[in-house]
Length: 212
Length: 99
Image 1 (spheres, rainbow over the protein chains, first blue to last red):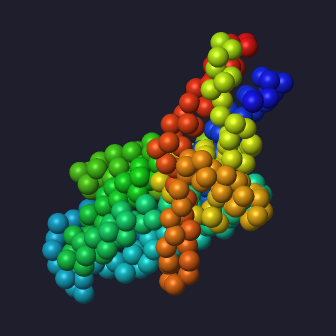
Image 2 (cartoon, rainbow over the protein chains, first blue to last red):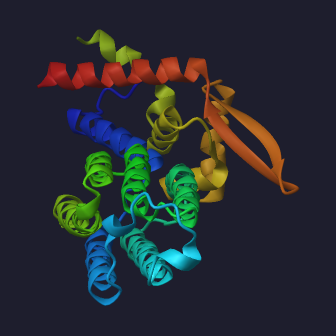
Image 3 (cartoon, rainbow over the protein chains, first blue to last red):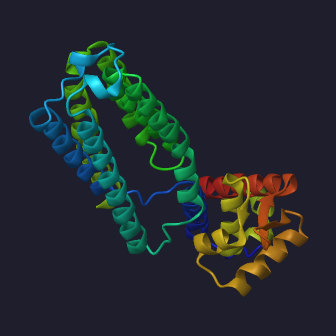
């Protein structure tokens, strides 16, 4: 027989426990908001360097299928800057999320983080390779819009496996990517807004909502 | 609404078993290590609760090999899903009726 003495409080606690377990076992909630803020700062620095130091003007070589060797001054440097931003952002996200998981007494490498990583790696890797091919055949102006679009798709996907809010972050990146493919002369600015500004805002939102 | 108390399943009275069912309800399948991490329990404790649920046919086990190492995964059965859902509805009813 069921223990009739079990009171209402226990039942409410049961429901709370069920809900928390469902979330804990299906979503990676240790993603760090600060990692988003840092990624934004790296992206702003990177786009500043690309424009001011390497004189990167994506519109000046849009739709000019020339070979890499004779067309674009400083293009490899710009690509390396972008990769540097990406690398720093990923490392920061991994370190900070690991710390956050530890603080909550969880392991950062579990079923949820594996699922999150494998789901975003498909759009990110296919996008990354596509961008390199596009740059290689000389359509340099498309690199920025494509990076925003594929990153946005990855985030949209990630929303299923971590904070739901990430989906909207993904949609914003996709819209910025589409805009930048049309307004190619403003694409570096749009990239700085997407990877820089929006990341910082979202990082702060995640921090305020889930980490305080 | 007294009836609904009878709908509460005894097997889910235990918090660990409740946790196992909740985790398996939202995951296609989970291996022993993942369950252990989510529930924060010892091997022996988890194994005994898994056995109880397995005997009731609420969960099922799948044994396979990954890189020649044995890998045991657990998933919820249709009977388990039904019983768990019934349990959830009963919990809700009780809380509602006592408010």
